[in-house]
Length: 568
Image 1 (cartoon, rainbow, N blue to C red):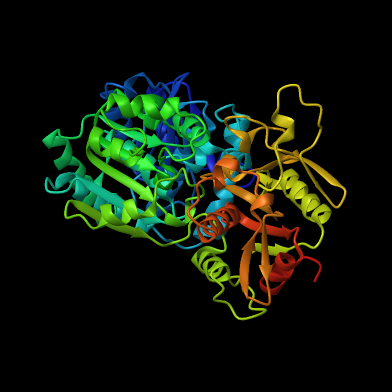
Image 2 (image 1 turned 135 degrees about the vertical axis):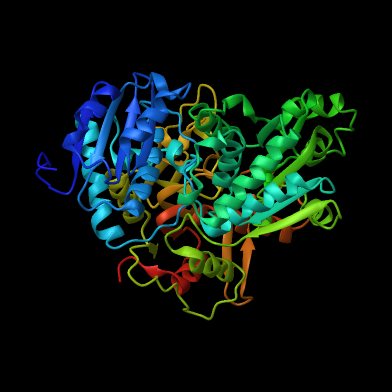
C-alpha cells in the first residue's frame, strides 16, 4: 500500500475496466479484505471481499453486474473482515441516498460486528472515503446533506435493531401462517415503524442469492429462510403500502422510486382500494385511517366506499383494507390519533382481540437521542405522573437537549442557528391561530403573533419539511407527523393551559382553530386527549433536541416545573 493517501489509513485505487484489476492486482495483496464499488454511468454495486479477483470473475458472469465496467477499490492496513462488512453496509446506505447511481445491491445483511476502534477509527475512515468519492465525482452530496434527507431516513438500506429485525421475522411468520389474516404492530412515535415497512418491501423483492450466509447473523439467516419459503409458496405477489397522509405518502413514494425492485405505485392512498385488491396491504400510520365523521372532503371517501358496496356514513378505511387484502399489517399508535376523523381506538381493540389477528409491540425509541427514557418521561409528564420539579435527566455523554424557553424570540433564534448549523430544524405549533394567509387573495402577511414576533403557518407544499423556506414558517401537526427533525421548537398555543389548583390540563375550545379537529368530538376529555397527543407527537419529532415555549401562564409554569430552562 505504498501509494496511500496523506491520511495514510486508506488507499483508494480506480480502474476504468474490471479486467485491468486482474492484470495489475500484483500491486495489492489479493488475500487482504477490501471494499469495492463497481459502476457504469447509471448503475452501481458495492461489495467487500478478501479475494477480489475471484469475486470480480463471478460478477462478470452475472446478468446485471457484467455491464459494470469501472471499479474503485478501497484498501487499508487497518481493515479486517468486520470492518469491511461495516464499511460495505455504510457505503450502500450513503450511495443509495446520494442518488447519483442506482444500486443493484440487495439489503445489507445484519452482521452486528463489533471490533476494536470501530467508532474512533473507522468513522474517520468513512469520512475520508466519502470526501474522496466526492472529489472523484462518484458521489454528489455531503454526509450531512444525505443524513438529513428523506431518502436516507426512510431507506430500506439500514441495519435494523434487534427489535426491528424481530418484527420483520414476526411479520414473515404471520405471512406464512394461513390461519392469520391481520397483524397489528404497536409502537410510539420514533420506534422505527416506517423503516420496517420499507425494509419489508425491499426484502420481499430482493435476490436472495446475493447473500453469503457465513457473514450474517443467525437471526438474519433465519429471516432469509422464511423469505425463501414465502417466495416458494407464491402467495404474496401483489402488495401495497397504504398511507392516509398525503405529504408522507408522497415522501415514501419518492423513497420507493429510488430502490430497485420497488416503485412509487406500490405506495397508495386508501381511496385506491375502491378499485384495487392486494395479497398484502401494509398500513403505515394506521392511527390516521379515516372515518366519515367531520371529513371536509366527502368525495374522496364516499366514492371508494360505494365501490365497495359500503355505507359511507358507517364505514371506515380499516374496513376497506380488510376487504381488499388477503393479509393486512397495521402499524399503529393510539397516542398519535389527533382528530375525530381518525378511526376510533375501539376498532383496533376489537381487531386485536380476534383469533385471526397477531399483535407485536415496538418499545425502543430510535428517533430521539434522548432514547426510550425520554419518551417514557414525556408519557409520565403528560399523564401527570411526575413529582413537582422532576426534570428529564440527560443520558450520560448525550448532547440531547430538552429545554424550556421563556422567550419565543430566543427559541426561534436557536432553531434558526441549529438549522444553519446542521439543517432540519423547525418550529411547530398547536393549531390555535387561524390560517389567514392561505386564503386566495389574502392581504395578511402573517398568521401568528406572540410578543411582537410575527410568523406564518406552513406553506401548502407536499414536502414542507424539506421546503427551503420552511425554517421561516411554523409547521402544524398535519405537515410534520411522521417526519424526523434534528431540532424542533414547540409552541404550546392559546388552546391549552394547566390549572395548578385542580392539577389538570384545561382546554379553551374557542382558541382551537382546527374546526375539523373539534367538531363532533364526544367530550372535552376526548378533545384534551387529541391535544396532548398532538404535543407529545410533535416533541418526539426532534432527533437531537426539542425546545418548548407556552403562551398561557399556567402552561408556562407546568413546563418550567419539568423542563430545564434555557437561561440556567
